[in-house]
Image (cartoon, rainbow, N blue to C red; front, top):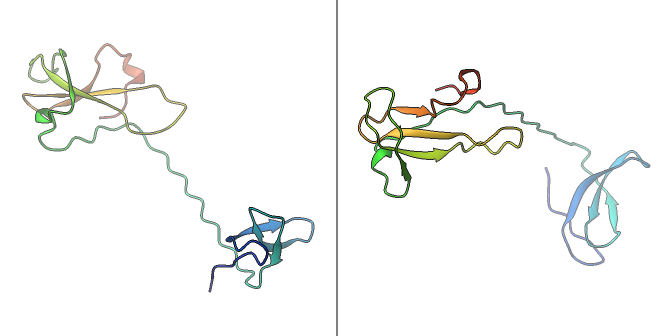
Length: 123
């Protein structure tokens, strides 16, 4: 079972770290140069890879949210010319900013129709 280890020199928390010269796992202090060989050699690594596409996640009554900005954008479903908009919330560096619009009349969610069709996110 894992437990917390503390530095015997400065009393700060020791963090697990691989020592490639000795080829062992050590608990090392991030403040001073102290380290100790770990008695528990069990190391667990959990890599999560999440690939997401931009999708509209519309909650009920989003069109009546007073905190969202409004735009004169014609709804492709009902033709109403008022919509609230918000930015894509995925924090990826390689994508451009995408605005999603929600009609204040029928709650239809859509992106800017002037964008090229091949670059529009999935709805």
